[in-house]
Image (cartoon, rainbow, N blue to C red; front, side, top):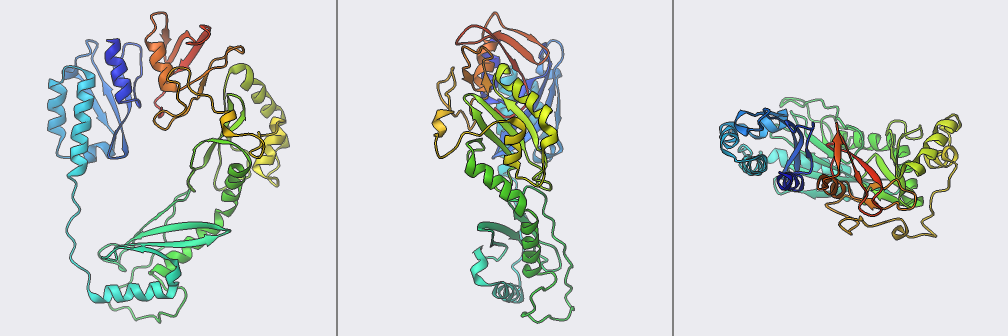
Length: 389
């Protein structure tokens, strides 16, 4: 039984039991680079043939036409691991077989109109265009930062609004006025044409300007502190896990609309280290001044100086996992720390979970596992969750 649970955790680390009797599992199954939420309800005898599978609407849509196969696999699979592996195979096949409907080629006027719009914008702003002119990538440079927008034109363009993909921390919706076939032609030299690439690009620039302060805040953090996660942040990333010292860090979630306001804060590390930081934050929260930078405010309220990039190396704070002896494991870094002040060893969540589950002396109360530290044998706890490991 323990071996089966360990195999399930390795293969599906985001799919976890929600109670001690293991009759409820919930989490995510990954396929084709996407995560799909699901929940499995098992009877008391844990027999799969009497189980109920609850799928998110995204998973239901992906498995449309395959539901009978999933039901058959649930009836015939010998155990949960086998069923999940087969479900993943069915999901992979379903996603691969999704075909785009055939679209008739666009008339010559369609291409000449687009070329005129690109010429008006400036060829220097064009990054990519596919042979069918259905996908166009444009760039903009604001405050020394290059941003891209991908415009996916639909078959009825410009009567139908295109889809736009940007690397923003907030939704980007385009205001669009459809053009009809008998609408009078507008001189291509006009700067702000309605229902065109030019109008999209103008809205793109306005959105970039509105997010300038947010990116200034995030860039200052990236330039002046040691950021553990994300290792290579995108422009849409609103979270940063910042080093405070050895085996102690703070994870902040910045509001893109109000980037200089107090962010959501979560301290990561041993209790005897992070509790004083939490006390300082509560005691000094009145000192937060939105007129100052977010980084300066954090220094003031926490009464600390962040380790300087110019003096220290990231390796000074990056401790390998005490179980697998690696720093990164499937993109995750150690985020669990032994509370013993004389130990302080760090572990990956998934490694510590498997270790504690394998110990006969470990016990579980609701979603918390109690056991012993692999290094110092002192008590250690782990809160189970459905987050990515």
